[in-house]
Image (cartoon, rainbow, N blue to C red):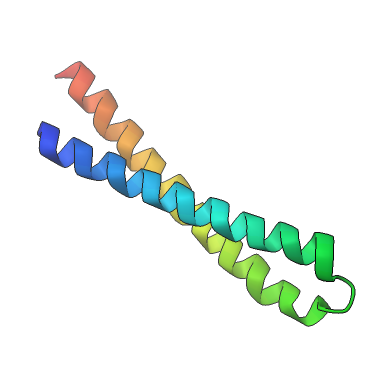
Length: 73
């Protein structure tokens, strides 16, 4: 992996983290401001938040693995 690939991967991880944080804020706002009336929105938003966090976690793991390989090379 060269430096350009590393920077692109870092950018991807940051974007995934931002999206996950935005979904977490949406979920927080639903819980804080609109429950119990908006309870039917909860499953879909929880799933979206879970998927966004999972994507970030996977991207972060790829970055960590790549950086470990670069250090060992």
